Length: 191
Ligand SMILES: [Zn+2]
Ligand SMILES: [Zn+2]
Image (cartoon, rainbow, N blue to C red):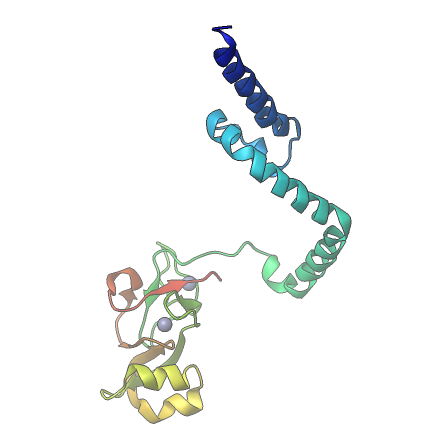
């Protein structure tokens, strides 16, 4: 009689354990990863239900759609697929005399595939121009990347290259490592 409460608890524990360990029998997605047994056991009941649901949905007809979409993609990107895309390392801005393209440690070029991680816009650049000193954030916000509209604040300047996204702008003459610029969040988004 005295043992009853304890065995009740044990029964309960056993029951919980068996419930928790059940999902492990279904090797679906996240539950596959056994890196931490404990975490998996605690997380698996709600997750596995979800996984199951997701798997069911995917198993049905979404998979067909997904394969059709991905089958079409390579054709559209065939030009770029011929060689693996690379990132500039290091990544440079340059003046108009500096060649544009992929930059490597042996061949330094001014990256022409820059993306701003702050406004999520591509960075445009204009050779032999520099930005007028009265540029402001709102001007770029409203007008970038349209050259015809940006032109009102672009002054002709031999050797300079004017860069801009929708939130930042720079006039560059020398080869400049982007990571040294603290006021722009531009990064090479692959060539
Ligand atoms: Zn680049
Ligand atoms: Zn930006």
